[in-house]
Image 1 (cartoon, helix red, strand yellow):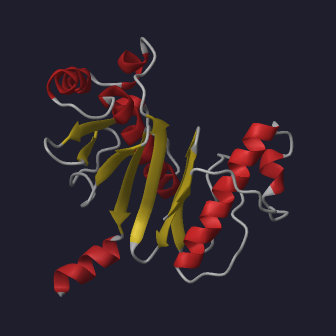
Image 2: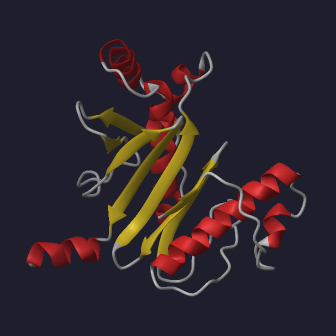
Image 3: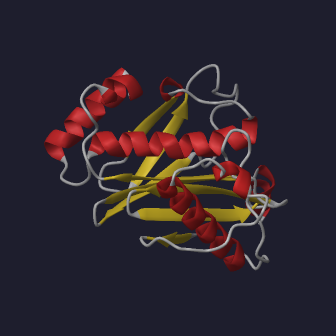
Length: 215
């Protein structure tokens, strides 16, 4: 993973330029810094510098054999990558640690999640739990779409925060929930620092899980 709180001025590859051809300056800086983080993360895997174009869906198109995710919010940019032999998907998201605007929680949370958030806001000091729920769901979506080509709605994934830890569990809801249950390892982590929430979730590759079980 590579992250920064500064804007990075770095040249883009020609394959990357179409994604921001008509973008305003702020969006161009955001995109450029995100791609710089992506290249740094790839370098940490031992891979050469190369383009990370945007798909029509705006998701990054990673080099063959690589999965990953890019995130950005005001004052923070990051990219996380891994080898496809080890991970089926990686998703990260960052948000300002601020309460959601009025009415948004009801639009993005299931009834059980709304009750969980209300309880945590009463009982557990820490992040803005409503915003953290949103951030966790965004990370889940970034794992799911590149793997399946289908988009999850906010109602399609149920998030549970584990008391006393910085982990969260994920339960997919029908019709996205597989007949044999959720994929193993479908859980994530979160952190908060200097006003920024970051969530991350990685799904181990089925082959990697099988190899570990044989050891």
